[in-house]
Image 1 (cartoon, helix red, strand yellow):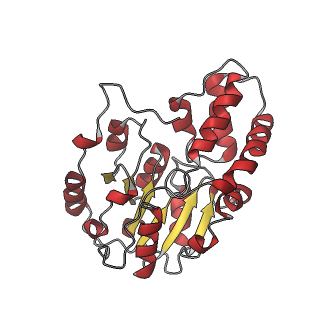
Image 2 (tube, rainbow, N blue to C red):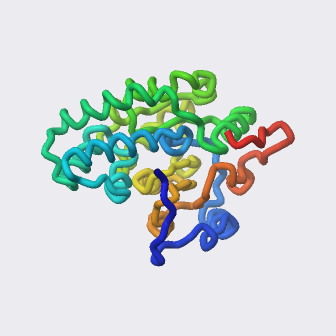
Length: 264
């Protein structure tokens, strides 16, 4: 399902080190991080694999190939926006409603089985223990958010709120527009300045949205992604996994002896 990068034009992770980005972030953005915002799909929960498989099979029915380029353009967008990307790019002979109906039917059965991605539980538990306010900002809607998280209720309790872009009336446009992150920041009780917010994202659209919102962003892209695009988009830091993240590099409390080292 997940294939490595083969293009020579793409950067590898060894060419974008954590130290390089840490130094840059300290120089460009010395203000402290007071609030943290997480994307959900492909960042905290391993749900993207389900979307990919379902859409690959769906597109094959019409003689089309659901490519990484199409998927990357969809990631983080509102449901109808993402459907339009696939339909228009691949010229699928279906309506938006037909596309959404099929995807919803298939996802309903598999999303409750999704697992945490490496480092997600460790990082969120650590920040919660140190009373760092956190929230989730996702392109999902209420129905699918419920399906994805139905077996992770205790995990959700560590977040102050969740902004679900696909059916939140205040989010006018999905990622890469900054709406979802700006709305998310405003809903913290103390409504922090965007420059004090740190975003974690796996999608290029999400990174662009966070940058447009005036926030710093840690990117944890899919292994098929073109890392140069993430670097050019303004990502503050690019990592292979949340396990690599060092909280102290953003003036957050460092991991301590209570931190769980397991790759949850």
